[in-house]
Amino acid sequence: MATYNTDKVSSSSSNDQLPSLPKGRDTVALDEKRRAALEEVDTAKFSWFHLKVCLVAGVGFFTDAYDIFAINIAATMIGYVYGKGQKLNSSQDLGIKVATPVGTLMGQLLFGWLADVVGRKRMYGIELMIIIVATFAQALSGRSEAVSIIGALVIWRFLMGIGIGGDYPLSACITSEFASTHIRGRMMAAVFANQGWGQLSAAIVAIVVTVAYKSKILADNPATLVHVDFLWRILIGMGCVPGVIALYFRLTIPETPRFTMDIERNVQQATQDVDNFLTTGSYYVDPDAAVEKVQAPKASWADFKAYYSQWSHFKLLFGTSYSWFALDIAFYGLGLNTSIILQAIGFGNAPKTITGTLAIYTNLHNIAVGNLIVIVAGLVPGYWATFFLVDVWGRKPIQLMGFAALTILFIILGFGYDKLTATPQATKAFVFLYCLTNFFQNFGPNTTTFIIPGEAFPTRYRSTSHGIAAASGKLGAVVAQVGFSKMVNIGGTNKFVQHLLEIFAFFMATGFLSTLLLPETMGRSLEEISDESQDGFVKPVVKNQTAQITQV
Picture 1: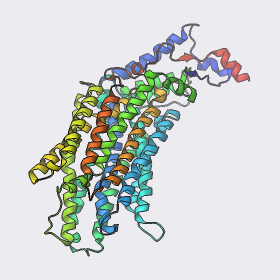
Picture 2 (picture 1 turned 180 degrees about the vertical axis):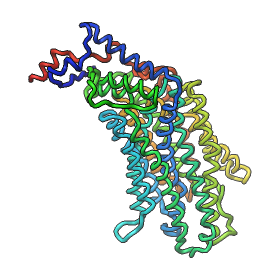
Picture 3 (picture 1 turned 90 degrees about the horizontal axis):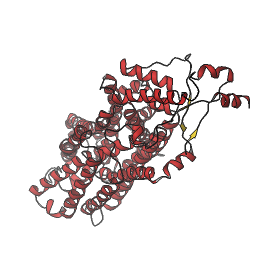
């Protein structure tokens, strides 16, 4: 199945580079050295280094979520300034919302593959640079005769999405490969939970800038609304700040010992790295040190096909990918359209007695507050409920429970939509149930679909496979956003919302079924989960073979 790679080194130097062990025992000794290093990582107590990994990876997800979901509020602001009739048409609204998931899909596949080829460390930080540049460019975008501002925003949000996509497999693999077995779930959940803080911050910033500009908005010419143009630019541009802060730390994080050992095939350096980051939280690479290279299973297209041609392995890739796809149908269908849904049920709209710029200010303020309520009541608590229980209950039970609860909630919201929006009191019940869907998305499959692919695959394909699963999720996000945009106004403005909620219920039910294909990963080492024999996993380079290759 797996192929092995023999390094081309000169015969004169190979004696120094290879361990001088008695013949027949070198494979056992290398295996023992590798296992000892991995055991140190797997059994290590929580330390400052683990916290640093969580913070450095988490800031990226904070930035990602802020940038993705700020557009939910900003789209209304942009519509007031640049939309015909002070509203974006369906194609414009779709373009600026779907551009990021499309870019994210491509970034997940590209960076997922590159992280397995050139290394986690070498790619970490590059994706953040792309996010920073593209986010700043959005805030400075203008319109011209050749390019509309909507077109410019679509391009920059697509590029930003590529950077955001890279963050998923890189942060997942770096966190899982550095984590101890008993806290791996909590570390990955803590990283991913920063999405909630990012969304919360976007809503808070929207409220702050809206209130700060209240007097100027009220004094604006209703035909131009110059100061509303300030609002969305500040809201979007603030997404650069956490990314800039985190960039240095991402560029200086060490390579994971599993990548160094199993892909770079340098057991000696990996062992040294483990000792360093567990004791001092730092790492050092001596360029003059002897390199102890080994033979190890090497990634290749033939090996990839052979590995995933086995049902026991393919079902993991399919199960993680489809579960993420089904989840994101609803997660992004709701998340990117919370403002539309709140307006559809009349929650937060300005009273009809209010007109002019006061009505515009009131609507923007209420949309921001409505998003804040939904986030605080459901999203953020859901992430942290998973954090506290993921290493107690396990990943699979939480994912099954989440999909089951979401199926029931969407059935109630969809089929009971008319009654739940008939009166002001009923509308409050709708909002409560809507918040519950956000809670069980995050105390459920939204978090676990990120965690499981970061654990379930062998090191040489871990990032690629996580990228495939995550990209499947973003395919679901694109499908949801395109479908939502094209279907929401069937029969009249926002008249199809209830049927979209019913469709979401169907996909939640299918996500429950795909979760049954997945194993429980809690409390197991990454090597055990990979389902590959670890006996003789690494082997010494054969001296005679090395010399023969060098002479050819």
